[in-house]
Amino acid sequence: MNAIINKRIDNPKRTQETALLLDELNFKNARSTKNRISKHLQKLAKILYGDKTQNNKKEDISRVIEEFEGKLKIHDKNRGLHFYTTWFRARLNALNGEMSAALPIYEKALKEASYRGGENQKLIIQETLTIASYLCRYKNSPSQGNRTNSRSAIKRIKNQAIAIGLIPPPLAQNVVEDWELEQFLQNFHELFPKNALLKDHLPIKEPPRHYPILLRRPGESITPNLSKPNRTITIHYLDGQIRTMPQINYFVLYNDTKAVRDLLEHGALPDKLDKLGESCLLFAIERSKQSDQKEILELLLEYEHHKDTINAVTKIKKQNTLHLALELCDPSVVCRLLEMGGSPTTRADIENITVLYRWATLVTWALDPKRPLRAIESKDPITERLNNESIRRWARPYADPFGNSPFIDELKQTNPGFAEFATNWAISLITRNLSLPKLLEIGELLLKAGANPNEQEFPPGIPKAFNPGRTPLMLLAEGGNAEAFDLLVRHGGDPEKRDATGYDSHALAEYFGNLEVVNYLRRK
Image 1: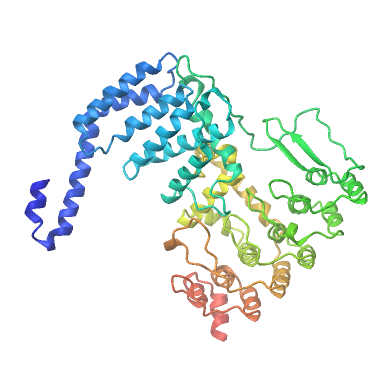
Image 2: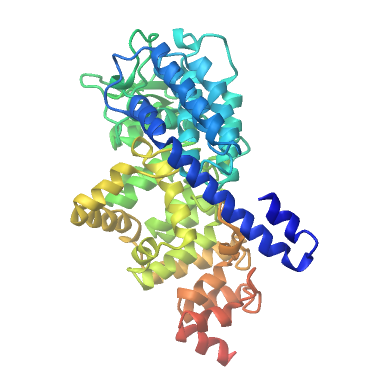
């Protein structure tokens, strides 16, 4: 290698060629090193990740790791694979129940694996997040050992995952949200199964596995307390989850019209939020959207709601009442929400978009019901990133920290018919109420309330190269019709405004073959 450098260092024109040669040599060296130590690597991987390790003792595996480390000192002079020994020592401690000892070693392994670990880096991050979340939850566990600030560790690890594009940047100010700690723990049993724990390991708490839906414990009966109408209640679920909420929210959630009416008549406040930022109004719109049962929603809309409640965005799923009301497609409901202080500039949904951009999306779906399915199947970077984040927030029991779901992936492979049915069903929940005339009426309401047709949208976590910053008007140029496009133009929409890639509405309409909008613009 030194000979190559000395031979070419005096020839600047060949600098790039030299760099490529060195890269090729480094790759060949790494591959050669891995071949020399592959037997030892496979032996350790089988011990630490195999099906049966209960009969192994920590000291026995430690000796195997030391032997492996000795081989690396001989064959891995560039230290490109030394992260394996650190990673294996971290896992060894975790399988022995020594979580506090494992965490700093895991963090060291992450540092060593940077730009070297490849796909392994993802697994190391996942194991490290899981261990740190375990320590955060079980602070008095025997596996805690010496106290460590595990929440700070989670923040550091998540920032690393964000930096390499595994997790999108947070929508909230906090890098780590409370719900994520529970989500990281959902994979504990898969990453550290019982049959992989070492002989004589320290006692390990078993994190509960959450069900995909909330099922109340049988025999638990909750009745409205009319003497304390604003009382907060606690609900226990079969999977061990516990939720607290204003009792009126509970009875709206479970569609008990009589209980809701009685509580309102006895002075219950209809605009209190629970810990997740959800309101009874949000629950009522969701139920009306899915089942056409509007009695409770109509009842709640007779009462005044604080604008902060209407504009609130839920902490996990990023839902908002005004955004959700668009899918109900009832102009009278949207009008009432706006009258009570609902803001069309509120950003919500996974994409962190305004109400008008969401409206424009629904217009394109009403015109072309197959559009959302094509977007899911297109595999473009924006859709894939947003889909992963949706899975991370909406399918938490089945998702890893990065928004991947082995369960859903396996379902697609083993039962593609059912997977297709489930996808179409989920889309139909959004599109079943859509009506173009009603959407146009709603668009008029939003624009009169101050919605901006020229506001650009940059969904978080999407690389700049794939994040052009489209406006509601541009979205309609792509997939809307002349009537909806004209509505936005009449309220200040600028067809000549360009996105980050330099395209204006006319260019987008031509590119996507939207002749109706192309002809509209030519007539202008």
